[in-house]
Length: 181
Image (cartoon, rainbow, N blue to C red):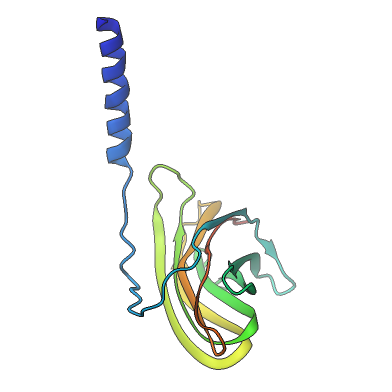
């Protein structure tokens, strides 16, 4: 019985140490104060490997889907390296939708791929209104990634897109791992 108690005590101590070492971040940096409710939230796990296009830009693609209206909204994420600096990247996103959209709200986080204690390189809150269209391309800003980093994880959370026909559409969260070369 004493041996069982010691093993259980060690196990609980280990769980407590792990639990206390994992930071929890509140996502209050882009609060949406509308009356709409979240229809579908989830994570689409994707392992994206960035490739270079003909301009030498890093390109990776992901998508978000609104399951309530079966309208598909594609979002392509692109990291373009600054010509002047090797460790400065600009985050671009392209929206392609089956419906006419005119506004996007999202939170983009670029972090290390560590599961226990990821290092956050930058957080970008995007709240952008644009001319009504089925396609939009925009910049979320620049991020500095240390030159010794080979992989980064990019997440897009709390994404809302405003459609002229359907109103605000809540989209599935995106998470992708990018290999930098």
